[in-house]
Image 1 (cartoon, rainbow, N blue to C red):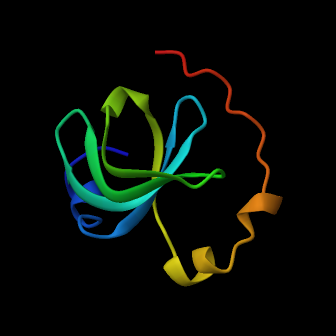
Image 2 (spheres, helix red, strand yellow):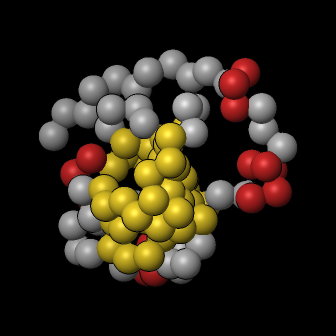
Image 3 (tube, rainbow, N blue to C red):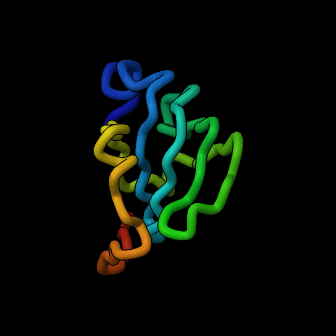
Length: 91
């Protein structure tokens, strides 16, 4: 996703970010820059639910940024979810 209009509409909303190493971090998007570095507040890492608080993620480590359906998310049983690891990203 390019920065600008795509991420601008998600500021102050809860988003899910999948990093190049397969981590899934959920938090409130507070800001971003032209390199897609993002700042998340009230963030936590899935599946372990590690509380991260205010968190900055470098743009070159982001694979996917997506809007989060908070109602659907609240009903997930995270301990039962498993995903295959992502293949390495080649720049």
